Length: 193
Image (cartoon, rainbow, N blue to C red; front, side, top):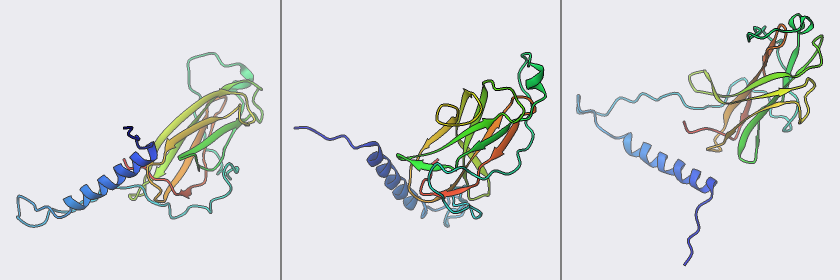
């Protein structure tokens, strides 16, 4: 006799159902101090972002706000042309792909030299208390211009298909540096923790 092991998605669905049952069972517990119902203090949970832009096609380029300045980091000697330059950063909208939420970030040289530098990306989920929490990060040492070979990626597994707000941030530290957030998207992807 053979036994089929549930797939990762089936196990995630089982975990979600078990958590719902446990949560429902705990909501009726009594407080030992008062003998009455236990006070209900809901911790912040992932939630849809109220100001999200309509979801575009996956992989579409985001319209980014003007990048705030990013400090130059590191103790290495920077060539004079790179030390005084001002790059730009860009990224696509956060999107769901193969059961994961992901986003990509890249940089444009503007007046910087055509050299490799590290692009950092963070993937953030919106919470009911109004905060954004970083769920995944990534980096890549790449040339400017983007494209599949010149971008950094951040990915996180979707643990539920309940909608939540997602965005990414992209940072590059060459020259004067640059950073920006991509526009928030409400996606059928939520984390459980």
